[in-house]
Image (cartoon, rainbow, N blue to C red; front, top):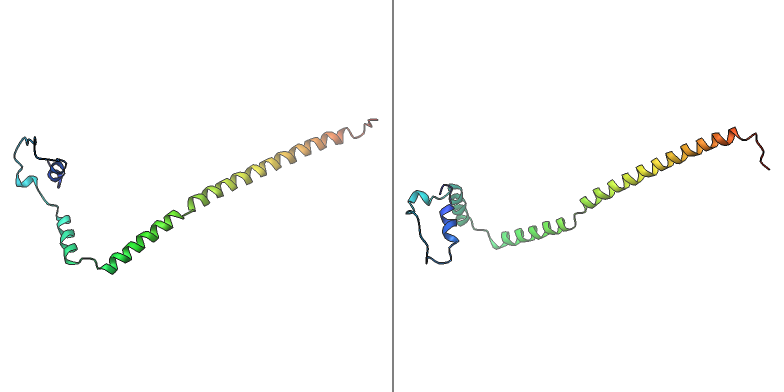
Length: 117
């Protein structure tokens, strides 16, 4: 096993030691501790969070969850996209209607000399 913690993870998955067979002895090199974890553990024990800091962190976390729940920016973006599509389609429809009226107006002008009873 190469990475830090692999022996721990492998052994922690066992429910009992009955039937456990190791193919080789676990050397001290196989059980290494990551220095970053050691520093974190040391700092945590030296500077335990106070009750007020824990409460403030809890409130901050809850506020962040509420902000995320009521974040309508995706909905706003989708509605803006829909509005742009509708406006574009409306403009295209008007353009086609105007073009059709002009064409039909030209036809009417050509045949305006004929009086139909």
